[in-house]
Amino acid sequence: MSGRSRRSPALNVVLLLYLVVFFAPSLVSSITVRTPAELHASKGDTVTLSCTFTSSSRPTSKMTVDWSYRPQSGGPPQTFFHFSSRAFPPLDGQFMGRIRWQGSPARGEASISLINATLKDNGTYTCSVRNPPDVHGSPNSHTVLSVTPRAPSVRFSDVAVLLAFILLPSAIITLILIGRMLCPKKRRDQSRSYRSPIEVTEGEEYSMHPSGDKAKKASCCDLYLMDSEDEEGYYNLKKRPPLDEGYAESQC
Image (cartoon, rainbow, N blue to C red; front, side):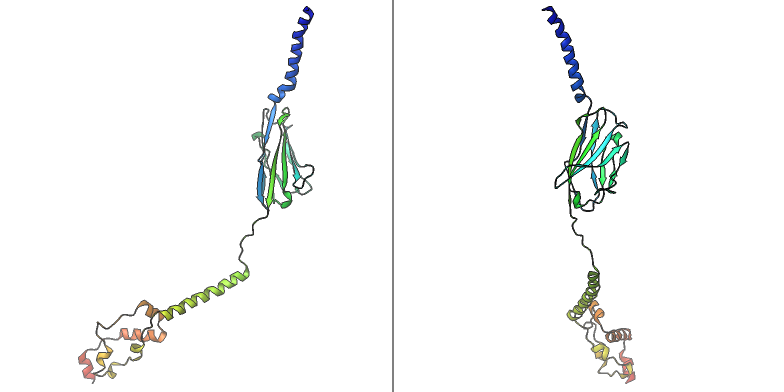
């Protein structure tokens, strides 16, 4: 009876050590990787595949980052990017020359950029981070990328530019002609019946110089719509000095 009681403490110690060895790393040394669940982009865009991680140990030269891709149509994932102390971009395949390392292990970043996204890039991207001794936790995270065709942009063709140069002057000329038709024209009697002071008779003197109440000034519309002949007669009449009755009688 005493022998069994002596063995039980030793057995308890062994069981405790077993639990510490197998379960303590999962509680202390663990790593967590996070990525956005979905990403949307247009064809031709540069897409940043974001990946961050937290680790209980500082990143060392043993830390590795792997990016894999599984097509939207299905199939096994294919690793196309690897990082271990430095970046190893893909040298062949659909991602050749289109992957750029954007990570910083010291800040917990393991992101990459996908240049010139295409419709064939649709699928699931997985970021895997290993940082020994952190070998437990959630070292993988997935992102579903959806690339859609870019909306067509509006561009002025040569035909549209040519039509603009033709239609714009035509519209301006049409507006001017409509304005000349709607605005009242200035009477041409005064400009065409102008005579020299010698030819003015006593009966015509009053008609050549109407009273101030009946005289009207030319409006802006009249001046703008005058013909060249009308304008010349108007300004000659305006510059003409007034004739007094004594001067008119002496000429007679």
